[in-house]
Amino acid sequence: MTHSLSLAVFAAAALFATKGLASNFTISNGQIFTPGFVVVDSLQPGTPLGGDNIEIALDVSANGKLPLPPYDEDASSQIYNINIFLYSYVTGRNFTITNGTASANNATLGDIMLSEPGSTVKHVRWTWPDCMVGDGTNGNDRGSYNISIHQRFRLNGENHYTIFDLPVSVTNSISKSDDRPSCQSLDNPLLAPENIDWADTNGLGALFAPGDSTVIETSDVSSSAGLASCKHALDLWGVVGLSCALLLS
Image 1: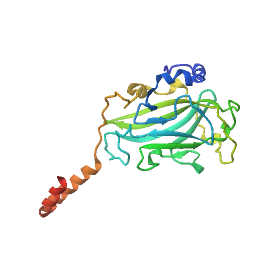
Image 2: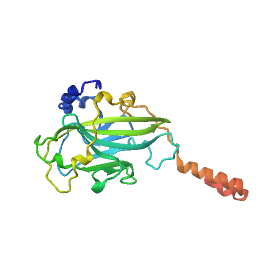
Image 3: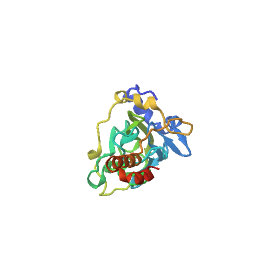
Image 4: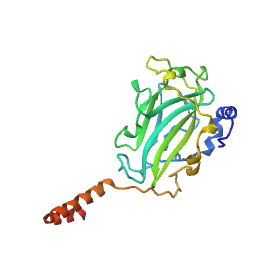
């Protein structure tokens, strides 16, 4: 995708996102691979959305290759944060789904890496804001959008910041409810495409898809801690050397 398109051309292209961009995705067995550790289990490109909320399922372990947090501070591979937005150059909207800090009534969600402890798949459930109420394309803020997944992470000692956009269409029915947050409270300034730095994203490409040879370097915190404890014990109390030797073996 050429990111030097003018804003007007990019807006027009967004209308055809479900047809024009899906062919550029790396998809295997229904999973979509991104320039980072995240693997999208759902949604699929071009999915028509509606209902009470939007639900996105993300594997945050590159299909089991990266351990879950907490990470050692100096771990050579780890996820710092995952932020998600819903934006459209057609409507001019850029909503925060999650930026790591939960707001009142979960209008924006908290750190998804801390949700569903022990599970490598995180289910992001976000309530549609009030301006998305309607059916079909009726309503000023309905239509073509991108779910934008921003990953800040370290891979084998190198820090990265990547952006992955998944085109969807908000065309299914969304009912009115007093529980829906205000669109204005979630909206952010929308950068023109030419002002977004895509270098890291384009340089990495889709990672960890079948056939990708990328190997993740990680540090085993629990193992290192155990060895250090035994070494400390050996230094201080030689009499417990046999016990530590058994632990080390």
